Length: 274
Image: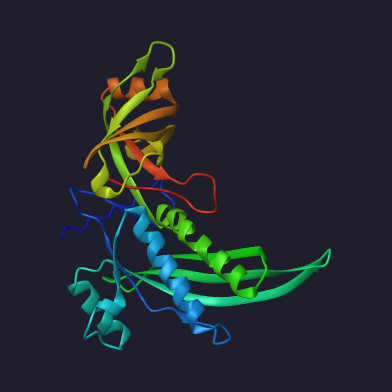
């Protein structure tokens, strides 16, 4: 499995996935550490929801560490074993706190829950921490503490889309213009990434133009795009929502245009690469 990483100057902190064919990063979900005041059943539920949410993104190959045998208990040795097993990133979790408080209003009691945890990404090749995200999920409607905790933890599944988008960024290039408006410029374009990298309809991208200033190469943000149709494992049709004229001019001038996935509105971000 090829493992290609590219950190571009215009990207925020995170992993940039260079997707080629069906080459996705392999991530391993470690057992979670936790505050001993939290019941182990809730820790298991949280971990399972994290795994389910990451799998749903289609962006990564997900391996449960409990499905691997013979791993060392020594951290350095275990990372080497994971790397030899083609695991690129180890996802570690810590369940910090889980609070449930009864609230009575108008004679009705509801349980307010606050759940906080942290996910940390470790590069198995270097042992370096390459990303950390803190999460807080709340819920206030359950008639029982169990109901409210369950609903709060169910939110974690959806949160993983933003987590993956923010920390496993993807980039591609504009391969061709499709529809062009005489006044507004590029309306739709084809980009060099598709289903093999887990791209889904609705994925947002920033569009960057390569520039050179005083002999130094860099990038300039020129527009935004949104995945409209997944054509193949390495091709997606996108609509241009901003920067149509700049994109059209740059493409016709032979300038390289790079698209970098980004998050929809939320606390995290998106991204991919070809």
